Image (cartoon, rainbow, N blue to C red; front, top):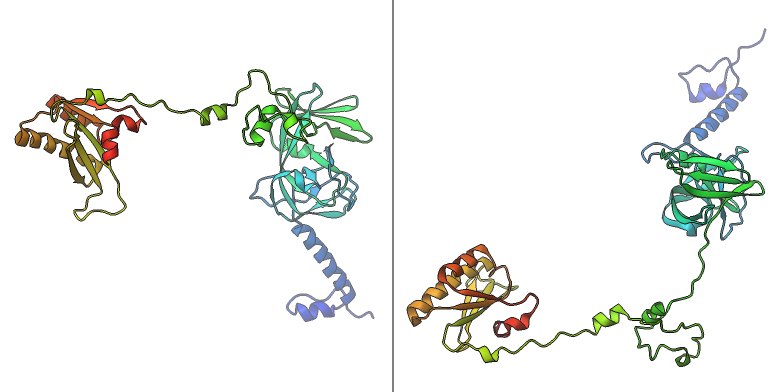
Length: 372
């Protein structure tokens, strides 16, 4: 009579669970199988999708991996890959470190070390060149000698892209049938046609700016022993930066010949502040009133700019009462303390002409500016 099966491993580690119907050896195999299933469930992914959703494993239809990294890997259109991939870290515009894995066609797994955005200067069959932005491109250091342009990743964008083939060429079109990417068959791969960046000869303007905007008389090939490729000065050439930086303002016309003949005929005024420290009277500004004829000045400390109208009203009545004088003209800049509804109403009521100096021209209000 055969003895019933009983697992000593389950009996020891799971005393409340069922431990019969299998032996210890069979239990070890069961444990190993469970560990393998757990590893499959916890493998990180790199497939394009929403950030907040867990990502499945990225897959490749078939690719040969190697530890040798190409400096300039070509891009190949792959209809089986679930994500764009490259082994060239220099291609990324922005990059974030994200660990993950990629499962190959032979069911082996290689590691991904990050992802980001890559720009391809794609050349179409008509000769046009445009910048194609690939998002969430995986950095796979051991990918091999080519970068993969995933057609599945493009389709997942949901923007109506289409894939077409003609002879040895393969094309990717936008929804409006505009060609975006052109792939030519090379061996067994459809290689994306790119416009490679190359060094370009500098123009005269670039040399002029690089050397610090020298005069054309100095920027000549015979003045430099190593400037055999220095271009000639273009006809009618001008540097806008030089013209702007060397421009000067014309001196304003002197107004000493029209100085006021009688006191209080013309009053100059300007406000100064806000000061870092308040006065003993808690004032943050002061406003001055200067008589053009006598150059006599009055200073009024004020708490805020809006108090300018109040102190000017007091000044008008004080001059009328104390000196029996009527102010005829009031010269200021275009500051908000002078150009406002309350001030304009006061001047209109008193019959005073408001002389405003030109904007950003301090010398036109020089008497008040120099006093302050």
